[in-house]
Image (tube, rainbow, N blue to C red; front, side, top):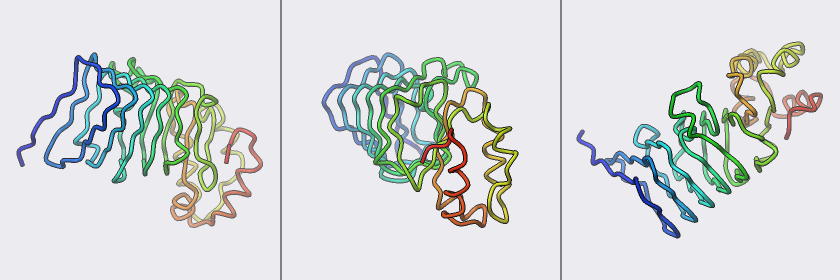
Length: 207
């Protein structure tokens, strides 16, 4: 399949609705691009979307199909943005150890309360500036440093080692990790109630 390449770069876009929805296109949001007060509608797979050195300011992202395993957010600065829709395995923030372009990453004052997040990481940032969804989501803060404490108490479920493995393998730059309890319960062969009771004992897990 031949893809159409669509480039946005070297300009400022303000007060527009940007629809990145053509599955036959590759979207490149490139260097020296500033996107301010725009609505970006995303309805393509992660492999169709590329971000490099973009500043998003006061934007709204409407994710119309689940965006899976998308790490390109760490190549962007996100300030005062809002996210809606389902995101799984996404990473945001400052993560230069990931790629050289990760030095462009930042996230501050963003709102995810209308999003469904699972296994989403917030790197090199202050999670207190972020509005993250509440239960049935839960967010582990300062994951790498807290991992030993999490490992001392067995995670609930017949396959609780699945979640323990996820928590124990986060990079040291991970400031927070948000997970979705219904999916965690399914993977761990547990229940949402068991998970909620378990995480209540840790003051660094927010729900």
